[in-house]
Amino acid sequence: MSNRRNRRRQGLGPSMFPFLAVLICTMGALIAVLVVGVQQARVDAAQDSETLQADYEKLQEQNKERDLKIESYQWRSHVLEGQREGYQSEIKQNRLKLAQLESHIKELESRWQSVLNQSENITQLSEESTENHRDLEDELARLQQEIFAAKTELEQARVESQKYQNSYAIIPYQGEHGTHRRPVYLECTAEGVLIQPEGILISHADLDGPPGVGNPLNACLRTIREFYARHTNDEKQSPYPLLIVRAEGVMAFGKARLAMADWKEEYGYELVSDDLPLAFPNPQPALSGELKRTVALAKDRQRALARAMPSRYPNQGSEESPPDSNTTFNTTTESGDGFSDGQQGEGEFAAQEGNGGQGKVPTVTQRGDGQEDSKTGANTSGVPGGGTQMVPPGGVGMSGRQKNWALDANRRGPAITRPVKVVVEANRLTIIPTVGERGKPVVIEINDATLSNRIDHFVDALNQHIQQWGIAIAGGHWIPELKAEIRPGGEARFKELQYTMTGSGIHVWRHTE
Image (cartoon, rainbow, N blue to C red; front, side):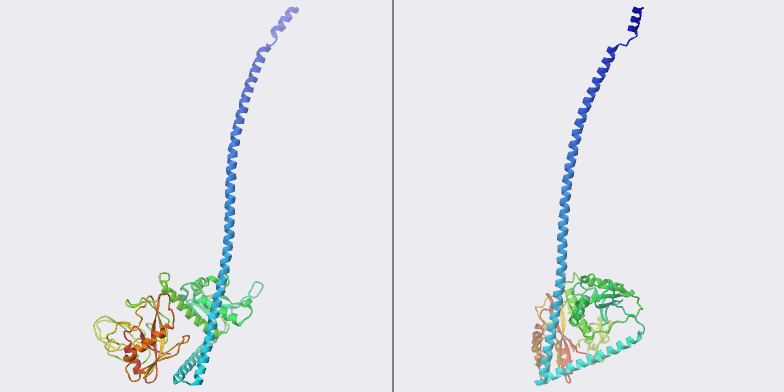
């Protein structure tokens, strides 16, 4: 029984050797795979580490380059900021220097005028010659005419002021964020910028000129600032531009801002309707005169600059001159003397007929009222009005002489015309220096001789007078225009002077006040 049980137990027990062998083999294989996996992971980790290290170094280099660029830009920003401050300081210094120079020029002019007045007083007291008495009488008559014109303007201004019973005033706000500075009223209208209360108009043509300190509006603002600087001691009340923009003055407002570019934020503006009446302070007569002179001088400088640089300012010059003459820039005014085309003629020749040539070629006749009549195949006769030169019989004053014989043969570049006052008497011609010119009156005695025998002496004296003017503009030259003031008994001599100077290049006009 026991043997049978033993055999039964032996038959039912598991075989341990194959199971252990399989387990050991499996564990060995797993260990081998694990070792291979660990080695591969180490290799992969080493490769990833190198890649990350390279990327990190590359990022470091890029960061360094960016830092260098940032530092470079910051340095350039600091340099440019310093340069901007330096340029702004230089602009302010140049503005102050310009104002000082203009003030010095005005002071010299005032001193010169004072010396001139003293000289005239001494001349009047000494009574050295009758010529000085006549000059003083002319000056007195001119001053009386100016006084009469000023009174007329005053009466007109009073009449105009009575038309506006209800008006409004624009004053600067003096509150917490206001200002105590004096406003300079610039009324922008359809015609241009009107400086109030003096009533000085800066037209669109003047605003379209070359910008900068030479612009008439900018020059007027400097004149106003210097005027009040001389009469007030408080620098906090220095004037500033206040633009009053009408509905029709939008274009003038834009042009005014361009002309006032160097004022930057030192100006204000107010929008008003076209029909709103405004009341301004009383004008300053002295300031009004200074502004008129400033505008005239600025216009002259603008036109001279445009003539010197026609490619840069093509629309600022006058009309094209004839082929046989240089470009001419007229420095005279548009009224009173008959210098420009289309002006109304004055004098006894305006209604007289003369012996003109006849022909059947197209002609353009300028009338005394400034209009032009075009005629073809008509017989032309008569003499233009006082604004044009008289054409003598035969058409030539000094036979045998070349055209423009009285002008400098070496003249080059653009020409600037300038009036010369000549007193015409029966027995003499006198060249009178204008205000601001040096020298004394030059007398050319004629007596009973004909003017053609003394014309060369007159032209030589005239050229010596022109040399005192100095340089016209860069590359240009002067051309005089004679404004003849006819004394009693000098009418025939004036006609002879016109006839003699025909073709000389120098025009002779009848001077009218």
